[in-house]
Amino acid sequence: MADRALYVCKGGITDIEIEPPEELEEASLSPEEAGKYELKLHFVELRAKGWSYIRIARKLKVSKATLSNWRAELEEEISSLKAMELEALQERYYLAKEGRIKLLGEQIKAIQQELKSRPLSDVPTDKLLDILLRYYAQLKEEFVETRPLSDREIEELKELE
Image 1 (spheres, one colour):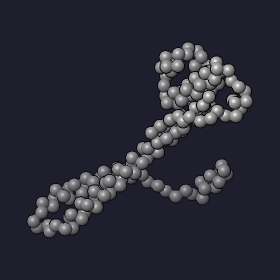
Image 2 (tube, one colour):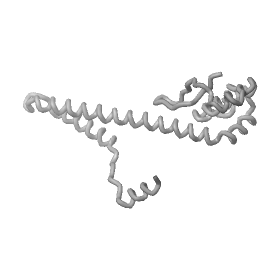
Image 3 (cartoon, one colour):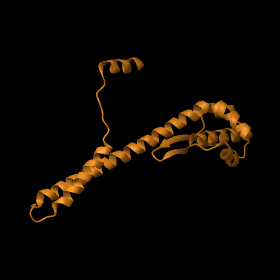
Image 4 (cartoon, one colour):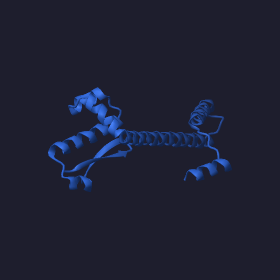
């Protein structure tokens, strides 16, 4: 029987078929135990995705009381998977922000080049300058200030390692 392991990808949590861990092969799970194990894995995945107990109970055809017991048993796995899902979402958000900043920068460069190529006497420059100022304002909204760590903060981080 193939076991399902949960992995996080940029789009969210996904599952991949893998061979069961050796300890499960050695234990020779009965079909009933193997089915319960599969249900628990599916429960962890769905809870990490934020599904409610009612929705999971309907999907897995398991009582809410059973799910509550499983949550107590599998709380660490659920929390870990939720953290990975959050990390994937943050990464996706960061990449989207990075993309917006790059696009705004490219547009500013294009407008600047166009301004340089036009003589101010025969082009309605006020409109082009207005667009340029709007792009600068939008780019400023995307700015995230960074600062170097102090010596004390660096020492605190080293102590955590």
